[in-house]
Length: 117
Image (cartoon, rainbow, N blue to C red; front, side, top):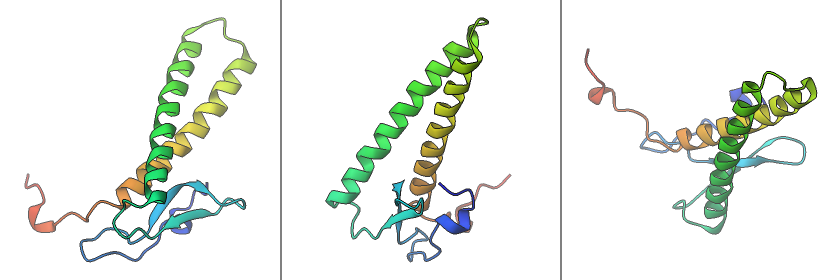
C-alpha cells in the first residue's frame, strides 16, 4: 500500500459528494490500488470486499490483543517483539485502507449543517 493518498484515492465525486469508485481492500500484484465502480454497492464483488474488510478488522483486533500481551511481558524476546511489530504494522495498513475506503463512500458534509460553537 502506498503512503501517498493522491496515488490511491480517485478524485471524481458523485452529486452527493461520495467518491464514484470504491477502494478495494487489496492491491494489484504490482502493489497498485484496486478500485470498483459499484452500481449500488450490492454486487458480488462489493459483498466480497465487505467480507474481506470485516476479516481484516477482526485480524487487526487479534493482532492488537496479541501485541498488548507481548508488550506486557517484561521477559519478551526481541525477535518476538519484532514479529509482533511487523504483524501490527501490516494490520494497521489494512485497517487504514478500510477506513479510507469507507470514508470515501460517505457523503461530503453539508456546510449548512456544520456544528456551531
